[in-house]
Image 1 (cartoon, rainbow, N blue to C red):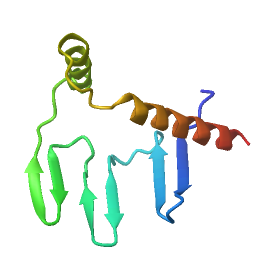
Image 2 (tube, one colour):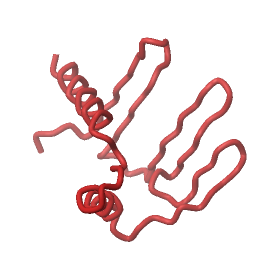
Image 3 (cartoon, rainbow, N blue to C red):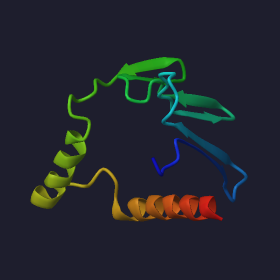
Image 4 (tube, rainbow, N blue to C red):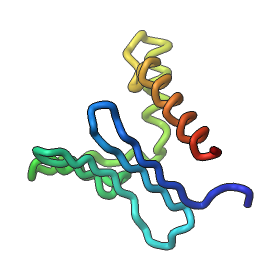
Length: 109
């Protein structure tokens, strides 16, 4: 196939914070992790699509919906029909789209 089967992005933010995104679609190892590690603790969502959220030694259970996209579609419909706030406001979506575009642009250079 004419697409990459792995990608790693290293991000240096203006405030000297660093971020790493590492994705491997070709790996046979079942890994689905998301961690934010800071100077005073960490948030661990491992596995990312699992029901558990661990923060500061506490754990919460948030069961996953059987249709992973349904909650966002329902949220969008509620925003349009009932004026409720969307889960991802436009300014955040625009920033995320810009970052994704920059990653793709730099990756082609």
